[in-house]
Amino acid sequence: MTATAVADRQAGLNWLDSQWGEAYDLAVTAAGWVAKRLDNGNALMADSAGKLHTLIAADHGESPVRCVISASVEDGR
Image 1 (cartoon, rainbow, N blue to C red):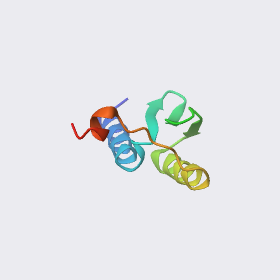
Image 2 (cartoon, rainbow, N blue to C red; image 1 turned 180 degrees about the vertical axis):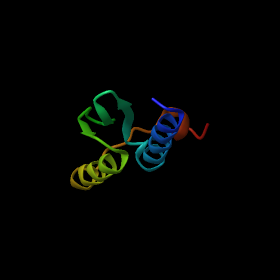
Image 3 (spheres, rainbow, N blue to C red; image 1 turned 45 degrees about the horizontal axis):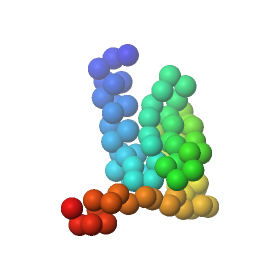
Image 4 (cartoon, helix red, strand yellow; image 1 turned 90 degrees about the vertical axis):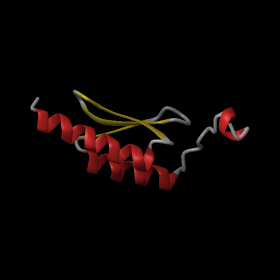
């Protein structure tokens, strides 16, 4: 994989994380782009960051992900 391809993947992950990182665990694997819901573990898979974003938006719109707030955030730490 070229340095440009690695940078493009990282940029895609950063973009997805900025949009959905609080609700989904995001990764790029040999099989494709993956988003795993943090509330129930269901996974979505696509062949690009843009397509995964579309799947996540539809999934979240149909059944919003319930995010878990850590104790340190709740306590104001």
